[in-house]
Length: 305
Image (cartoon, rainbow, N blue to C red; front, side, top):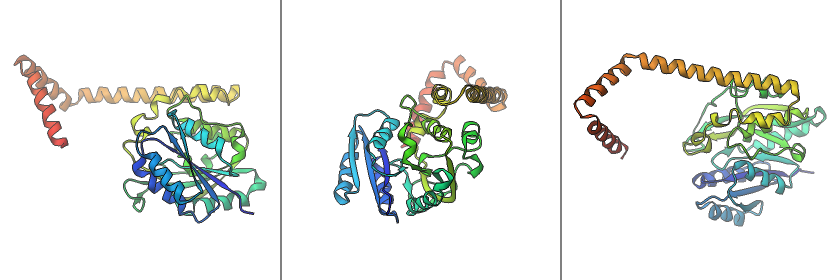
């Protein structure tokens, strides 16, 4: 008997890529799946595109909700999913044709080893999924445990959620934290490994992450939530784990800020920076500073056209 796989796709303001994401689902060599397209109150034509795919193939299921963020959209998908296994996919990314087939094979082959997660490698795409570049970090199976995700995340590696393939049992008591606008994946990965489960690694690029200047990670960034995650981790770690983790994280943030201050000082001491200050002072004395600012703003607008 072939198990059902539920694919969960949250959608918000990425309709220009949605067809490619859904086509990559339709192309899967493993065919027993359902795909939950979660429209998170997107103001574009997400609904139109999603309904078109639902009409084309009944395995695509369209759901609408008021905007609440990617975590709430994924959580709705988890609630509605009927599959024995879960696969996440962001609406601007794509899956390799064999992502489900190869992940499912690993999962089923190692059930007796308490394997509930299968992780694959990934590559980067920009415009066309047919043209890809190497990943932004080098993955290693030694990272895929509780210690690795606690202390090496954002240091040696980070992992897009679509690289994972999950036993639905993991989500009986785990959800994406809806109070975070970034780093929510990190909290979920750690929560998984706190259950004591194991992971298998496929060193093949079975997921493709889009370099998208309009993505939430490019517009929000990860720094906004580096310290906010402490509250989420406090709920899932024991006292010793939390003390060690929080000390490590705060030290990393402090070192990052110190590095920024050092580079800022070096920049201010540079000849080009000092020359710029000199020109600014001269223009100010000559009552030309406002005029020069206006000129450069117009010049930048002209170049941008």
